[in-house]
Amino acid sequence: MLRRETDEEVEQHIDMTPMVDVVFQLMTFLLLSSQMTGGEIVNVPPAVHGVGVQKDASALVIILPPSEAGGASQILMGEDLNAPRAEDDESIRKYLTSAVASGRSRVIIQADGQVDHGEVLRVAAVVGEVEGTSLHIAVQEPPSK
Amino acid sequence: MNSARTWDIYETGTLVVRKSMTAEWIREALSSGKITETDLIRPSGTSEAWQRISEFPLESLSTPVGIAGRPESHGAGVDQDLLDPDAEIDLDPDSGANEAPVPQKAAAKDERSSAPREALPSIELQALQWLTEEDPEPVKPVESQPEQVVAKPAKVRKVERETPLLEPSVELKLEPAESSEPRLSFDESEDEEDDFTLSRSKVEHVEEMDLAAMVDIAFQLVLFFMVTASVTMIKSMELPKPTESTKPAAATAPGVGTRDRNELADEFIVVKITSDGDILVDDEPIPSDRLLESLRAVRNESGKTGMLLRAENRTKHRLAVAAYDAASEIGLRIAIERETSGP
Picture 1 (cartoon, rainbow over the protein chains, first blue to last red):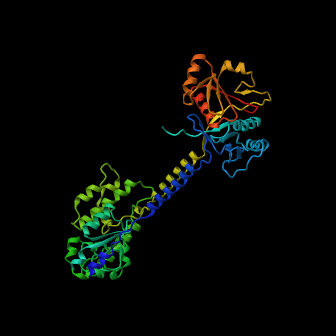
Picture 2 (cartoon, each protein chain N blue to C red; picture 1 turned 90 degrees about the horizontal axis):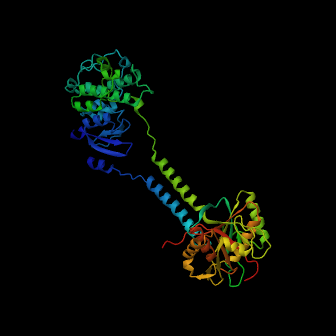
Picture 3 (cartoon, chains in turn red, brown; picture 1 turned 135 degrees about the horizontal axis):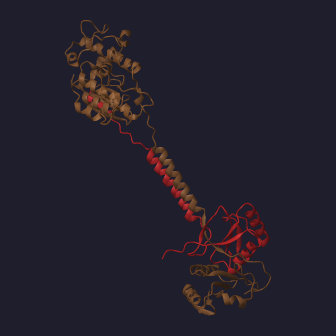
């Protein structure tokens, strides 16, 4: 009887702390990595050459192909689809001027591959008019062969 | 009585219960640091309350008979005289615990009747207090770790003298080989003072900080910054900024400005891309997947240092970027002609 009582007292505690830590790590990683792959809102053309430009230090202009055939391309001033739409060149110029004033002198044009070349050049011309800017065309890694 | 010959040890650090440990094992484990005095002990096979090893009458480990009665006898025979270093301890059954003759060998102790054995733990407790409080050479906090280790063999040796159960090899293992400290000399007077104790000095109770949690957080931070840093980079190609011009058929390139078409043709390989996707290099139509090879061939042939892109407004941006990429591949300067009139 006494023996049995002492047997019952052998309790095995499993320390859950490391497991919880690892789970949180995995969660953080998956959360961030999924944003990284799903964050591409524009299907920019592929190119082998190109340098990484910090998003924080640059002003983004997004050019999307027209939603219906024959329509005009959509130009967005910002880094996502909720950014204000540019109605004319003047609004783009204002946006870029304020961006340069806040230290974001690199202008990245994120144009979809299906956008007209002339449309990109039109925006590039506006960028050229704003002093202190440099012009970048966003590209993506070509698919591995 | 068989069940009282061994003890259960509850290790508070690892939450492990070691059952039916012998007295020798406990002594060895204490001196080797496997268990500490803050761990709990109780006789095997009983449901007695757990006691700290430091509060447990350690001498009784070798004389397990009557353990159950021990805790009640705690402090019963305490006399303030015993705290005096000069006081002598009486282990004679006739005289009781309150007077104090010279300590006897443990071998003799085992043969005594139960009366002095009951008083024994309290005597040891007092001796232990005196040793820890009035040790003429207390372990100073500034002393380095090896010196604290040195103190252990002295105590182990005394235990060995009292209880021959302990193997001499334990003492040899603990002794640092190179030490020349005076504490190592184990002079007889020091041995006398340290009798009756297995306990280590209080300085050795070092609380170890658990670094695992900190390392976890550090790795998380590293991972977080690594991932976020790669997110904020956008791969892009730097292009020359167009210069202002109202002149039709103007072209742009660093240091070029507006120039005549014929002038440019001497310096640049003209790549023309129609809105249908046809590519012409210097007016030679080429398949779209041969652009790089054609550019390289023309450059080697003519020695031109740049590429002038002359694309229609309705040309897809993707094809223009392919031309920029090919020019970058073979180190050509890029110039872009702007069509001001409609296609």
